Length: 139
Image (tube, rainbow, N blue to C red; front, side, top):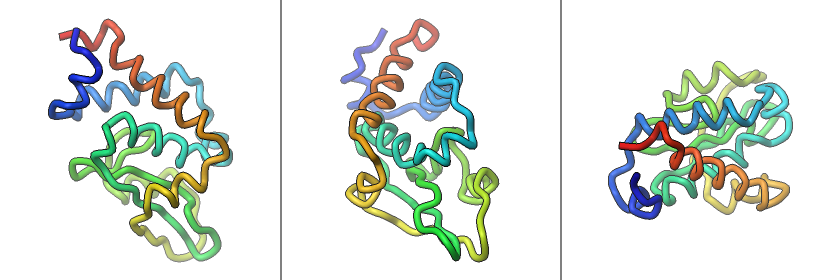
């Protein structure tokens, strides 16, 4: 099995990342509605961003009433969140919005300001990292 640091230095395989996110979702026992209501998207986005060795950028969805409804990570021409990869239209399907939807780039500091505790980010990052090391990811 590959060393995790070696994984971060190499080209990141989208299929393995997608399987890792699917497994994360399974073992976390997340309720999708509760996840979004409890600021889960910036926590997951930050953990995922760390997991891919900061090789992406952050995009935030807002509407007429609320800023930063949902945060995704733009990486390798896909937008990533707890539901895996997709395009912005697909990401909008999971979020109820009021009025006009707006996507904009946001900084790491902006996303971090939406998180209550950095330990939540570490928890996501650690789970993602450990899932990659699970037996079904061996080559």
